[in-house]
Length: 116
Length: 110
Image (spheres, chains in turn yellow, brown):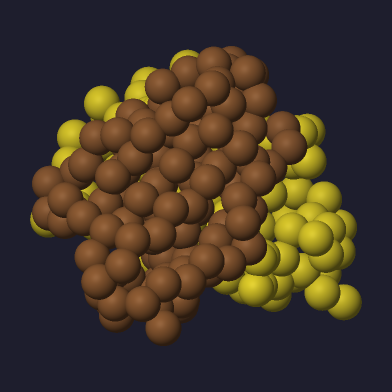
């Protein structure tokens, strides 16, 4: 069955960095566009980033441009999110998602807390 | 990249129907037929209920239906059941490989 498993979340100080990982299985990862979506505590969902099936193009919500980088390794069925210059407002559960025009598959999420 | 507008809450009794609206602009909801809807129970990951405005993934009950008129998409849930109580989010393609969510609607089954 399809599985997406995020890891790498934790507590980090403002200005710090964190790298999230997402391990995919049960579907043809290299054929799917992949998203990162986040949800601040008690708030709604927010699209963060997207990469095409082959990693050739990457797109971001304005609030993370220049700070976050999405990448993938199709040989290992892995998706990544490098987060730099973290701010308190980046505190959220981060979900990886598989799909192009929608998110077909979702991971269980990993919590990132930015706090001093 | 402004969030789509959804009512904060809706409610209905078991067996009734409810409709959740999702209003955007001609740059997102109105411009593409790539609107999807997600159900999220507390502490759980979202689950897709409708995609491409009105298509239902396998396994989703036909009580769930989607539609769109102009810049507003809608999710209708008929024959409400207790397990439908959850948060619902619309999601639309907004061009140039960017997407936007609605603010979310809390559905209460009375």
